[in-house]
Image 1 (cartoon, protein in one colour):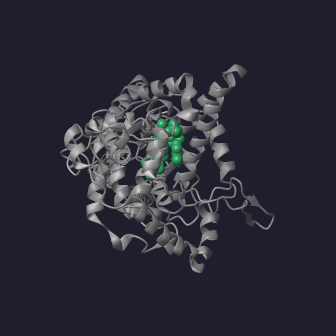
Image 2 (tube, protein in one colour):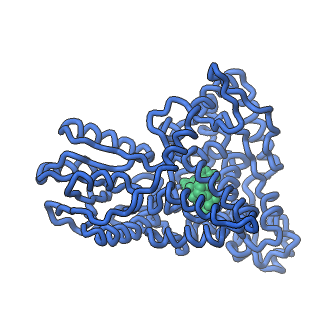
Image 3 (cartoon, protein in one colour):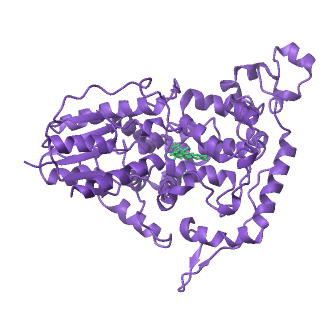
Length: 510
Ligand SMILES: Cc1cc2nc3c(=O)[nH]c(=O)nc-3n(C[C@H](O)[C@H](O)[C@H](O)COP(=O)(O)OP(=O)(O)OC[C@H]3O[C@@H](n4cnc5c(N)ncnc54)[C@H](O)[C@@H]3O)c2cc1C
């Protein structure tokens, strides 16, 4: 008797799982998760991702068991495993969700598609986000997003008629066997759907009251933000269920809870952004490696400065807020949006570092690494998209605005506890006698800036703005807007011309 295979990928749940739903309608189903060594050998993953995955798989295993079946976790490359399975126990339908991943997973999917075609196996890929495959331009993107998000969530199946794997599979390898980067922050979030639901619940019912006004400061953000990003990246939650639960919560709130409601409304706009950014990688996978606007090629690539990069990665740039963010990332695997943007902006402008190696390092640091959001944001904050107004964050001003009393920097950099308040933002300027008095050695306990912030930023801005002003660079912009640009604030005329709103002032916070 034939059966279908459900290939779990970054969708580790049984609730609102279109691929599982489709397979079980047809009869016996083999639930499969693949640990693919090639996917775990890229520069963008670390032990924290693998451990979060295993924690999530344990939850998924229990959920599938409750439906009367078994999750089979197999180690091997996708085509090899499917081929072995097919020879031992032929199947004719493979069901999974569409995945917008990095280059390795994209190539893997193309190889699986070829393999399926050669054996006349149908591979059905369902949509899991508001991301549209094969989209020509962005004009009707929002309509597609709404259509997907408004459909009712698919309930958890009551039973799954399982079928056994035709071989005995050993337990999954450990992180060392996969030769993973050992980075696993001691305070990172743990994986699994039951924790995902608990985090979402506390956010919707309570923490979202702090969302407005609380998400920018690194002090309030860890509780004010939803903290669901890793659960979305691994698919422990479906975006649709999060959006629908949020809408329902907003409807339940009384007029007296207007602030809470506004917080939730701001949160829903982020859920749009989630897909808006992933769509960019879906439509142009090359943006993982190439500048979105090719006119920016050569801007920084040939100026790589290992000393600057090492100082950044070690948390020794000397700028306390930057170094504290690196320390927090090392310990927790998470940072809020503004601090991520400031880190990348510091790397891209005063330190003049190319976004690719910086992005690979950060991907290993961010537990919620989501290629579509990550690479689009890296390029946006580095000024290489050609369509976004460059945002250059001054780490000293950010510290004055968001950590004026030094609570954050002193929490994450112990030596800062010995620095008097008057030197909080520029500790490297402390006279040696004062350093001795307070037992702080600049260049040892705390970093000494590798560049003068104001001068290096001015030079960087000059280089970027000179390039932006070139005729051919300006001319390349409209094609990128058509392909990737948000239509918010733009008018589309009958002749499909995009009419932009009046130009904004550049958002430089110097
Ligand atoms: C350089 C850089 C790299 C980033 N890399 C990632 C990444 O790899 N994975 C990732 O999920 N987010 C990334 N972000 C976006 C954002 O910082 C995180 O989504 C957010 O901090 C996660 O915390 P949260 O779930 O509490 O966010 P909330 O503010 O509660 O937002 C809820 C959800 O909305 C989405 N979202 C929020 N902000 C953005 C945004 N600016 N762009 C797109 N989607 C957004 C995320 O899915 C997030 O989980 C990056 C931002 C920058 C500046």
